[in-house]
Amino acid sequence: IFGGKRKYLLWSAILTGIGFIILALAQTITFTLIGISIAAAFGLTRKPLFQNYMNKHIKSAERSTVLSTVSMFYMLSMAIIDIVLGFFVDLNLTYTLTAIGIMIIAFGIISKIEEDHLID
Image 1 (cartoon, rainbow, N blue to C red):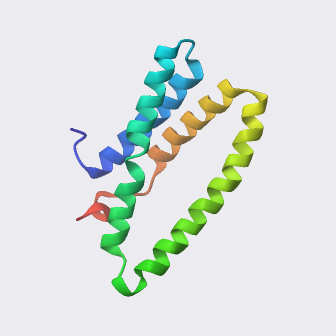
Image 2 (tube, helix red, strand yellow; image 1 turned 180 degrees about the horizontal axis):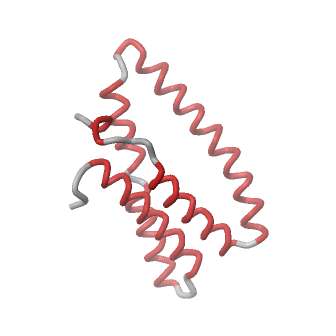
């Protein structure tokens, strides 16, 4: 549907960002549910995809250490980001959700992942 694995990663980031922007602008429960559905449907597919590629490209002898280290840094960064986002949500939820959406789209566009990295 998306025309390749790289394009899927790009479009899943763009659609996840759009989901957050819809959440920021939502005034009704319908648009809120649409925003949550779009953000979750495309955002939650990225982590298992990256884990699958990491499992395929990391040597078996080093896999548990590398995956554990990646998980540790992910959890540490999420703990820090959650605190920062919580502060900004207290200031203004709409601006925070819009900023998150824009950042997701921007990082998806400037991503250095190439189709060669995504070989099965």
